[in-house]
Length: 178
Image 1 (cartoon, rainbow, N blue to C red):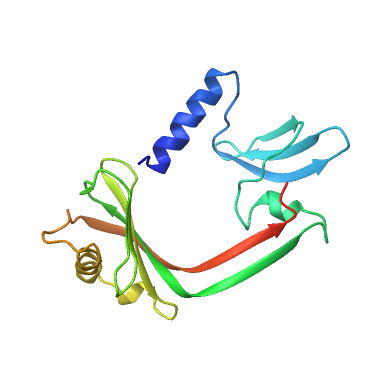
Image 2 (cartoon, rainbow, N blue to C red):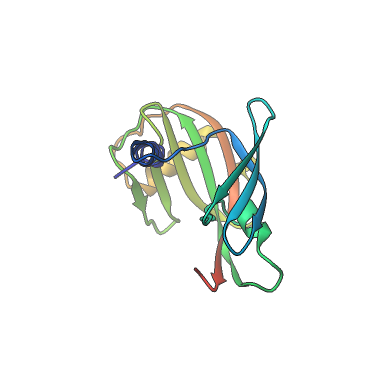
């Protein structure tokens, strides 16, 4: 099991050791594609400065609302979209991890997941009804439900929950994928 923050750190380190340059605190503003290359216009978030990057190609891993998707020409792709009948309650807590690895639990009452961020912050997910809202879930209810869905016989490490929100579960597929 490999926490996402560690994976990103390690891959960035390898990339830089091989001569690549990773940019942080930079927001892509626009993309321009020609026959020969791609130009990305960026804003440096720390000081507001402008940055232009020229590349042979851009890999758009910035999500469904990101710059690369917004830049696709009209009609270039077909998007298939499916909304599912459940939502996730996503929780971030200041707490020492109980488990040493990622856990996904299927329970008759719904799914639960644990993803370690680092040794002091953990992310949890609970499957909830699509009409449920985060405000319905106080800390006691969250911790009790996690323990129940993880089939635990002892208590999780409980800490301060500092962020919680619900999000829809949806599937998006874009064709063609290249």
